[in-house]
Amino acid sequence: MTSIAAPGQLYSFDTSALIDGIERFYPLANFPGIWAAVDELTSIFHWAAV
Image (cartoon, rainbow, N blue to C red; front, top):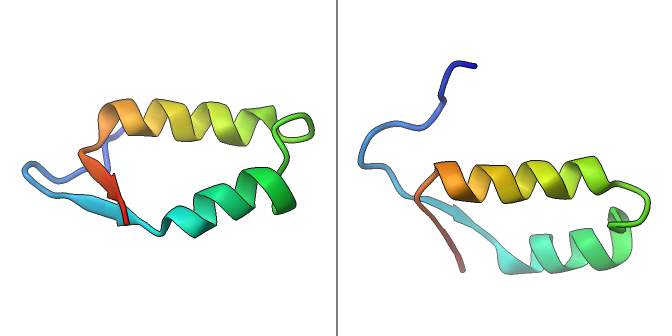
């Protein structure tokens, strides 16, 4: 897999998108693959939830 992360870059995410995503739009029970990918990406990228 080719990395899309640029060295030294910080990626930010709106926390409401994560919260609403898992609670309202993409529940973990129905979309476990999405949340597994989010977990994996958080270990690869330097990111902050704002």
